[in-house]
Length: 445
Image (tube, rainbow, N blue to C red; front, side):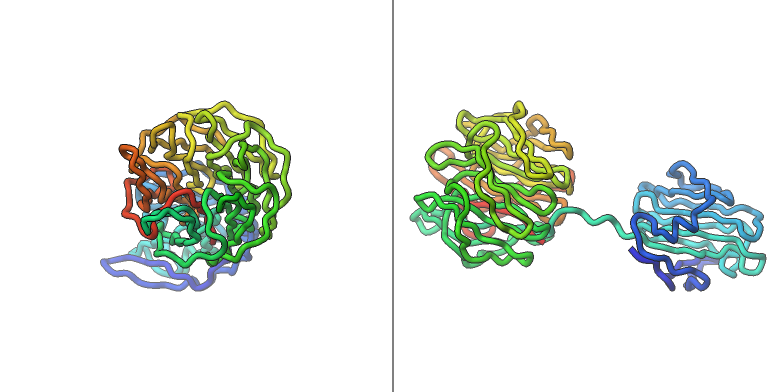
């Protein structure tokens, strides 16, 4: 955040708009929330309740949070004022860019112009401090600061990679990848890097990068492939930990990752932490029910959750703390199933969706920002299993690919379903790229 000098305000009057600079404003320093300079200048101001109306009358010595979520707000200034009288207005909901505030100076001058003009402020996140000077210049804005929005914690882009495909008529492991743009558009196939394999997992690390790990080529492997913050997949890195397949992975601690559970001939509950530089740690003694064919997602901005799985089509979950510690089993919510996928949405929540209960499903279960899993949400899109999911656009998600078996006839898919920042799954989007199942996906910046 930084203060802005010479920003413009629109002044309307008698059917015309004039552009005036902000002569007399002060440059503010950067800082958290409202800047330190703003806080100093706000000393002695009495802040009022949130104002949501379309009109209001301001009083000297007061500060106003103006919420224009639903409407423009016209503010009438006092009819009389003395030198040093001060008023502050601040954008409560960051919506002034959609519905602005309009200041009526009520017979007094505003920055040297008479009351035939109205003043508009129309920038999201803006805060304005005005001080009365004299009859000549009237009210003068001495601070006009736009405060940057707090950045969302998620990543802009995603990547689907690896898996198992029958696109040539002969099912085979692949290492092909497909980039997901920050608007949720899946790109065409990118030539594979590293060992072609299936039944692997992937997670973010380092705040802006990703890692694919484990899987099977028959035999199971523990190799990993790093994903750069531009979506480039690296060559094989020698595996660490027990080689296995059908594990799950998610981010924790804002910049680290964790691989957990899986099967190496027997179901496992071991985990392997991923450092913020992409280094995979040795096996950590398992917590919770050993299982495979589960899913995992981050939630709460810095924590994770493993959920569902097999054997027995489970619905239990295990929370992951922001230090990477896996908790004991939490009684399941929603339909127990396996071969599902999960991703983050809304910058601090998650969603489990699709899967297999003996029949393919398209139900979903939302995860709150405190890790509470909700009951089943009616399905959207083609019911399927063995699909992949990741975050995109910092606060949205996408499910894609997978396998459907109508009438027992295997069908490999490439369709996708977007997840809004409110956790709503969209209907099918036509597939892009090679049809496949049991790959993995993660996000990157």
